[in-house]
Structures are given as structure tokens and as C-alpha cells.
Length: 226
Ligand code: ADP
Image (cartoon, rainbow, N blue to C red; front, side, top):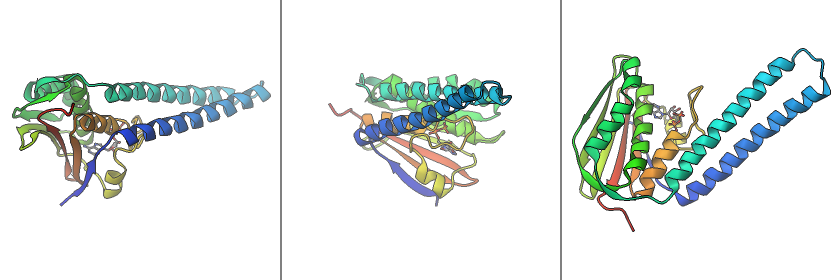
């Protein structure tokens, strides 16, 4: 059996996220300031171009983090509940990711349907993040499937991939803001998905085994708490 973690939240998590973002940006700003000061002190030095390149990439990183933070803040905002058919919602999300899946030669499949009360835009954002991660982890020729089904209390969206899976240590750190194993990752996708599910009164649960793949189970109550 693969390791299991349960993701819950958010109010304490939101505060923690704010603190971590602030801390991280402070580090980047300190680094950029030091690089600029070095340049100012040695105006004719030949390494200045390399330094500018580091400064530029550091600023890009800060911009990306701020953008992701804004989208997380939106996710934590008031939700607008309506009656949502999850089957079509998942199909639309898969359509958005179909080009990416095709170029990675990963097959996308979906089945099932269920109706819940939810905010469809936020929920779509969460599903997009989970499926994008699944595609990213899956080698060419593999498959990502998304199953929707009614459960006792509401509904479940299960995203299954035949990808590289995760070691227990990765699984443990999953959902920590900025934790990423990708060079171009932001480490905020799971944080965002988890926030959205928690705001709906649901949860996110990961089961994973290295080399075998990952199953993410998102549960949603039939009705959102007022
Ligand atoms: P990012 O995608 O920017 O790295 P996420 O928060 O979405 O940020 O994911 C954090 C990390 O969790 C990823 O870098 C990856 O190592 C791991 N991860 C998430 N989903 C999966 C998955 N389905 N299979 C394998 N690893 C995953």
C-alpha cells in the first residue's frame, strides 16, 4: 500500500502561507539588493552582466510568486455556490489540458458524473492543477484518468496517474507552500487545490507509490456549509 496523507485547512494555512510568502520575498529582495550594491561599488567590473542576469531571474521568480499568491487569495475569497454537474466540469478541464497531454503523449480519460453545490470556477482551477500535475508526472504512453462518482455525503473526484509516484518524504512535504521538485515549478498547485477543496467543506487525499503512480481523491459535500 502507498503512503497516505490527508490535506485539510484553511484559515491557519492561509496565515502561514502569507508569512511564508513574505519570508520568501524578503530573501529574494535581500539577494537582489546585495547584487545591486556590489555592482554600484565596482562599476567597471566585467562580471556585471552575469549579475544582471541573476537579478533578472530573481525578479521574474518574485513576479511569478506574487501572481500565484493572488490566485490563491482569490481561491480563499468568498465562494459563489451553484448546482454543478461534475462530469461536464471535469471534461471541460481536460479539454483545456488536452494539447499539453497530447504533446506529452499521455492519454486523458474521464468517466462518471455527480451533482453537488459548489463554485464551478474555483473547482475547475483545483482540478486543472491536479490533472496538470498528473500529466507532468506521467511518461509518454501513460494514462491519466479522472473518475467522478457520488458518495454517501456528496461526491468524489479521483485523479489517477500511471506516473513516477512520490517517495514518502515528497508526500510528507506535499502541500507546503513552494515545495516543488520541478525546476520551473512554483510549489503552489497543491496548496491552491487543497484550499479550494477545504473551502467547500471537502478534502484532498493522496496515495502514492514511487514508480507506480499517484491517486488523488478530492471529496466534496453535497451542499456547502453556509
Ligand atoms: P509544482 O507543480 O509547481 O511543482 P505543486 O504544488 O503542484 O507545485 O506540486 C508540488 C510537487 O508535488 C511537484 O513538484 C511534484 O514533485 C509533486 N507532485 C504533485 N502531484 C504529483 C503527481 N501526481 N505525481 C508525482 N508527483 C507529484
